[in-house]
Length: 506
Image (cartoon, rainbow, N blue to C red; front, side, top):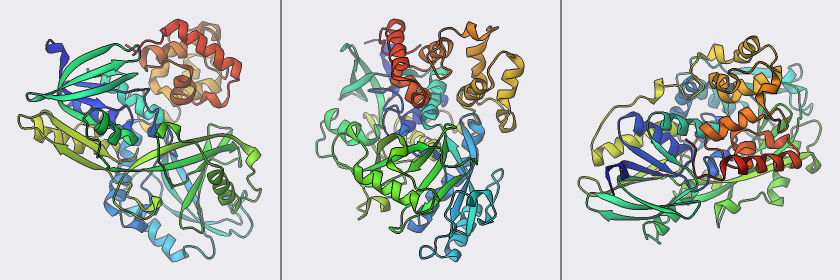
């Protein structure tokens, strides 16, 4: 084993926390390798409600520190990735018999002022009988409130953190499992196994277990700690239905059980409704929406919408398992959404950092906290830096991001405006890497349907570790909602020829 097989840090897990930590640490000057067993965001991080938000309902559980941190982070993250994050106005109808008006006003006042909001517009009161937001709702909903949070393309958010880490020198390996870690002097001797079954050994002074819902599984299988029980697995399911209304605002609906659900404009043609909260047992990869969850979401939305949501309106469902730190809460919806970091070793011994819980919104702060913990174990290098550094494609002001599609159309007059909008939304300024040199639509190569071209596919393979059609259609994009089965099969065949199912991108 030579010096090239020795790293300061090995991160296990390619979700938002793992990729965020890898990015932060490489930027501080540590040598970093990240191993993800499947693909980026193939677990919890791609099954979210797609929000960068403070968590309005967490105020009821007195999680003020978490809410304040999340509220502050909204505008930090928006500035970092203005192409994949956008502001979204949320409409909260007042429901007679549930939370009283004074409680809603108080919560929204705190929401507006707790986090130092600067760019996002404040809360306002709505007359739903006359406002466009009231049109899709039942006539009994006459009063409401409108407040700000942000929407994010969650899986792309993860990939961009990995891409930035790689651009700064981190070694990134997908389809790679960490199978064993054993102490070796002041470091860990670690065995990695690729998708082809080949193994590799390396040394790392610190291991970061950021395996999400598999964090306890990694402790058991990799470290032999079969009694590990740190996380409470909670399944959240969503339904995607045909577009329910024409405006661009989202809804937050209160339910009689004390929970809330969201209805959010999704991919132009749909409405996303979720989420549920139910305890989960088993392998998180087997999570699937239950008939009970479908009924819950359909009924909860139909309580508010003038036209009832029907099961036959559903075009897609997804379920994910959230690894909440097990704080002993009696109900799944009451378990803390805050993150917990636990460290072991260091100071001449192999160091280990375990990550429990966390949210998309607070991933960057979690990574900073992780970096500070690691520094105390293996020695400090650089300081915090990520709050001021854009993610790939986001190297432009927020105001420019909102009109970047028009710039693409000006540069490439032959470009279809809808494709320009999608490329700018997914890739930001790096959309130009896909289009550069093209003088016509034909120059983008073979079409795989729904505007997906050979140029874009090759970009995703070469720079974003995409290997399968699922990687591209459901994580790098959401074009799986639009392509036919035959088009998806053609893409899969093309990718097999192009990648040979290689273990990683350059």
